[in-house]
Length: 386
Length: 185
Image (cartoon, rainbow over the protein chains, first blue to last red):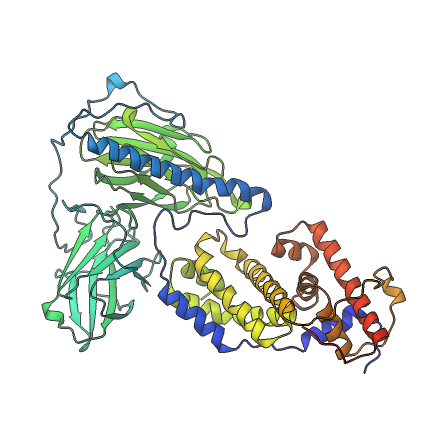
């Protein structure tokens, strides 16, 4: 027994005597949970209140996902209605109030229900990343049929990730692989890594951060889906090592890469840009309509500052629009999410740390596969001012 | 790899980064949980629940620098919940209704040993234990405790104050009753 007349000090000393090393069981259980509960990437994944948001901010933040999801759902319903009336002329809708620029409809080319200048779409292997991204006539990718396994690639920049969707049920391990020769011309390539292991290698671009690798049921076909991205001419090597629960023959596996058919859990297009404060950001465009032909981040200063929480839309040419919006520098990964009609778009911003909210403007130029007038687009941004 | 980078990678679904985060944070979290619940198995349950919540909710944490504060909040809540559940199942010798909580610290000058502290600590509420652990073991300031628990600073201050008084009263009540015979949580 010790004579202590300072309870605080006695309490501190007593508390310090307890165990300081965690047993392994909870750690193993949590790690196991993580491996059996893979995350999904997509607009919905990060919507939701910040668990450490201030009490005042949390109420606002809670409204954000509801509003965003509401827009998406409304858009999907609208798309379904429009789709069911595909033989009718497309309705001409007014821009949303948040779209502050709306050129006169008389200046806009008419909307056609067909796409006379549609880009040929085909799935092609690529040899260099400087080749223009090609899109396919396949429907936009939906959510994976099975929960994917996410691999963060050990690449130099931007932490590219690959979601591996295994339809064979044989995949037991997926890891980042060693770099490949970026000048190789026979990519994508499947390399033998052992009786049950293969290495899948391809060349991407520094601006395409998200990929999906789908292993078909018979493990004879592997498809790499990548966002369309006009990045540096310098290739970015990508490689994953896949280990199966049975023997596989690398020489009998055909791999192909397909660009820009994302839409739900995978961006269709990505771009790296600089905001009005010259700080970099990465924008991901989700286009389930498959009507976007390219996305390019452009200089936001050219069109004036739209103001925080505001959106400006301008016609560049018959098929191209420029979208500028006011946001915060701390939101470095904004998303632009379209609906099935390609007419409704939502700019999803991240309500990042309020203490780091430096207002900035950003702008992208979106080229569509056919004529598109700004007056027909409805573009919203559900987090005006965070 | 820096903790901030681990948090960012784990938020994107990187299992290896999550594993590293778990190993980095688990000792700290377990130590907090154990000191609140005073039971190894309950502390393990609280830790496991916290780590699972970290995996599930990490993408929504906007600022990676808030990871430590967030995990303090999660472990405190999980430990409080475990302690409450244990209290429902066990016989607990609560503070007597006439416990004198008004005595000033200066008036409380008694001989305190570990057993007295242990018994007294178990008799105060889990919420009161949590603030005392965060302050005296975690080394958190009043403002940090408020942040961790998601309560106003003033509330944190009063909670700390009353927790200390309750602990003193519990120890004093224990000394009046005689020691060592209670069934405790």
